[in-house]
Length: 282
Image (cartoon, rainbow, N blue to C red; front, top):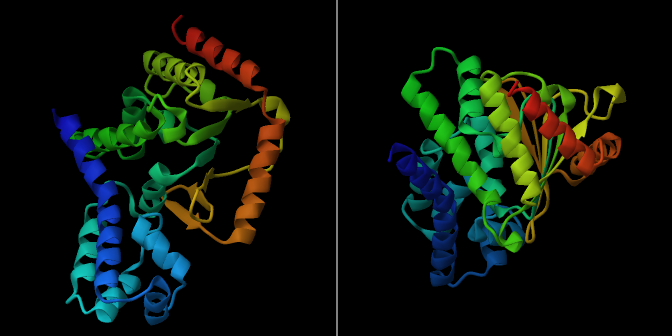
């Protein structure tokens, strides 16, 4: 029951920005403004107003205050923005990236040290949180585990057209690090293999033999969208950054393409994952 409630809260958080956008559109139209006219008043393009209204992009605090001033909404958008920020179920530096995952047409990830969150099992995620924050209360740990599992719901729809194309490249070391113990690792790797065999994800392994490669450090996520520019998210210990600069995104895309070219082929990667899972059961 507790996990179901937490997943419901996460869904409400994701839908909150859609409500913000729908309300922005309703009040703009009631004021008789076009997207271009509102954009001039808050110093952004009509395209960005459209993305705010669709929930594809999240406005910042200044935008919220300017919406109130332009539409004479008596602080409604600023209060709504602040409430949504308070309800963030993830670390602040990661929340912006998470909010875009359900909207993505494709998600490509490079994982140098751990199985990516979208592929994690409960036991594996629990071990990761306990290692990173050993003094965190157990209830909060379980809350974070539930939120992480809820993110993976975007990969579950049977209809491929309703879920993002998901492609991950994992460093080979991930297959041999016993996060959570041998049983937890066996379950984790079996879950990854099952997700691949169900054609919900494509996972490649970057083998030790590659040596130096295009992204030596840090986690990388690339997201593309039907109605918005692509985004890159880069992360290190306790810090992350969402990047929408087209030139920087192109560089990250090139780095990721080089990783994929260096990684083992799809079937060979799957065999290696399944073999590692079997080894953890012995």
